[in-house]
Image (cartoon, rainbow, N blue to C red; front, side, top):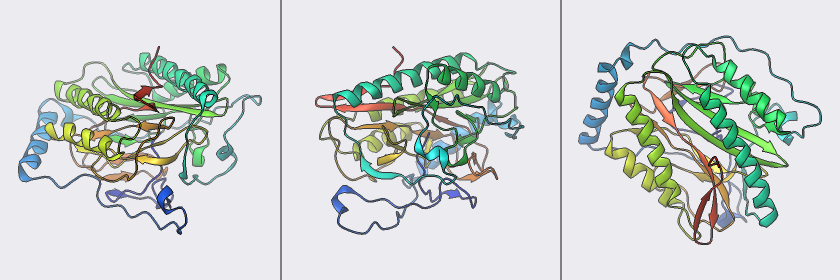
Length: 349
């Protein structure tokens, strides 16, 4: 689940989870934390890149993408119960969306093992959820399956109750860029869907997501999904003790630009005992100062679009939808920085 940060290209609804928040960098620890000011997240492109993007959008239309029905919300069912014996994150009791914690978590051996347990469960749940992606299945059915698998494991579904989020998983279909709420809409042949799973187990969060193809998907959409996963992996390969955080976004941006895709303004984040904390992991160029330290855990979760990165929030305050109806894809892993590289914690064993 992407961190709550402002985005210059998002038209915020008053209760938006993307409203401005405050951050403090470790180097500024003695200074008051200024409001985060965000420039547009996608670098300005030369005209040639703009032509590539237009061609990508035209390919989407020629393959049937433009003839898709616009995404419409379905009925959202009641919040599912969690057994009383399962520990809850502290934010569940609060109505407001928590601020991103300024602390950067560095783990010891015991906490790394707990992170591994949480991340392995999240990976298994996501893998199971992916098997349910078929035409006529509703995102509400996926949510129920995810919820049951998590609570059966003695864990809590992290999104449930986070700032009032009413479901246990995020399901973002087609032009829904991020934070889609599961509902009664049936998946259609040719859809794509990002399923974003986070679990809270033994005091630690494990966070992962993947975009799945539903039925017969056209080649241009398959390419978008494939390249988005490649971007995530290139960002992960930038991670090692002492590496600059900027290198993650540089590698992602370089690969995405080869195909003319836009990078949506949603970010990765530190994760562990806290769901969303520093460092903020951008998928674009030159935003995050500082260097990685062995023992840190955070998510890398690029979101790529065939068209514009401008989004509008539905009046649920969560669902971010592309204003031009262009498709988006996202992939996410939780990673651990090591002394000689990186370990992906949310890979399914």
